[in-house]
Length: 339
Image (cartoon, rainbow, N blue to C red; front, side):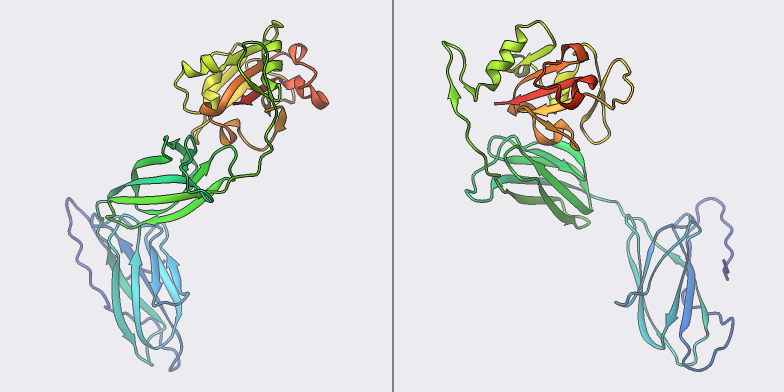
């Protein structure tokens, strides 16, 4: 790296920038495109890495390296504007004109960027059905792949303390297609309000079965759930137990189940494993309403408010045949039933 300025720092130092003290290193033929280079520093003399350097509205863009150094080659003669940006710093822009006989290597010296106090924004919104525009409650809300809560009874949600910049909002609700909303928060924006429209997925209504004084269960699925609960094999979590717990995500309901290890994950959900190590098993096989799911966490497809019951089998010998499809029971089974 070639630098024309050498800085020595001691104590608090205010950096005075001498811009356009241009230094020629060679003289090319007239009209040859020039190259600019320089160093971007903070107020304490610290080099600023990954600062963006834009030349006009062209594709000539550079990023500063770990030493704050940048270079842009192929600049034609004429008027130009050089802009320096970095998140958390105030942008700077300079206009200049490059003459026809400009030197091929032009040292811009040191460019000072002043830090700014980054503001935090409160993001609120409402989740609605795209066809009926009715509120969609109990939808899982994620910001930049991190779970931040559920929509309320009127479809409302709130995410406080969001920094400026580009973000992705992800909304999931059983019975609806996953919805993604990309948005940008300008620096200094205190409040952002969003309307999220979810597209309902077609669903076939199941028949209703009534047995004595029992609760009505769809398609007899929960009847089988309670019949298996009376067998003495496995561990069963009923709706009554779920309502006594303040579960944030569905896998929170699995804490304390014998034979399972539940540990918090990095993106808002939990990792669920068998307490005993089983060769070739990454975790229990998941069934949702009798159908095996793969490639997704159960937290991504159903939330605690929608769960009617959960049955857990941590030993292969306890797994009922209905779940032991192609040897799935060897790794244990977690079967989730919705209301």
